[in-house]
Amino acid sequence: MTSIGSLAVGAGFGFVTLAMFVQGFLPAMIPESRSKQVSRAVRTDLGDVKWLRYDASDYAPLERIGRGVYIREGCWYCHSQYVRPVAGEDLRWGPVSEAGEYAFDLPQLLSTRRIGPDLTRVGLKYSDDWHYAHLWDPRLAVPDSVMPSFKWLYTRLRLPVTNTESGPMLPPRPRSGRTSR
Image (cartoon, rainbow, N blue to C red; front, side, top):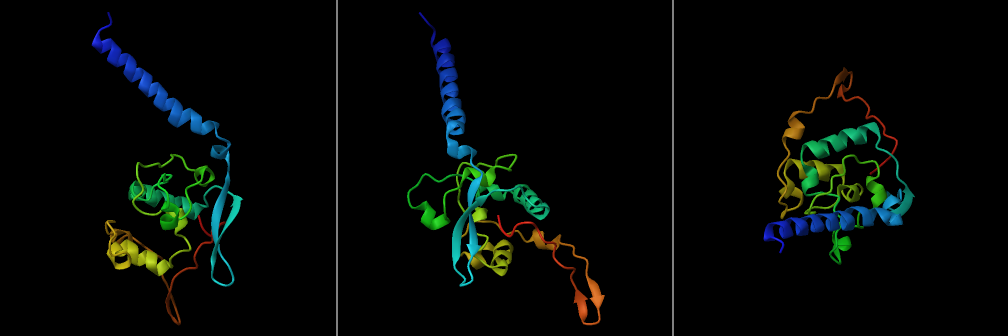
């Protein structure tokens, strides 16, 4: 007769193997998981936001710096790339995450639950001023937010200022290859 310990070890090994197969191999076999076609929000001449399909590309240098801040500050814990299984969540947070959006992300930052929106979905939804206010004190922009304040992002910012005849001036902003991500 088999002891209960060896039965538990066998069952544990079986469940781990089943989990790896269901969560690792099966999703990789779906053709959509290898697609690099993604949705992109663009603003029309009338000011409306429309979603278009396009080929994903790697991050521009400035976007890569932003991703480093996203990882360093732990933004991905709540603004994760989690695909939501709950019906109606796309009305609240925007379209469900697509495989191609994260084709160039290493490591993949898949969290267990998304509390806030996927940050790729809010690029054109709010103005830059809204984002600055939200990072300074999240409850200024979203009263029910559980996000902590990120005031230190503003105290560490060092920009070269040049004095001109009309007063101090910032250097021109570097252009990235893409407008939003």
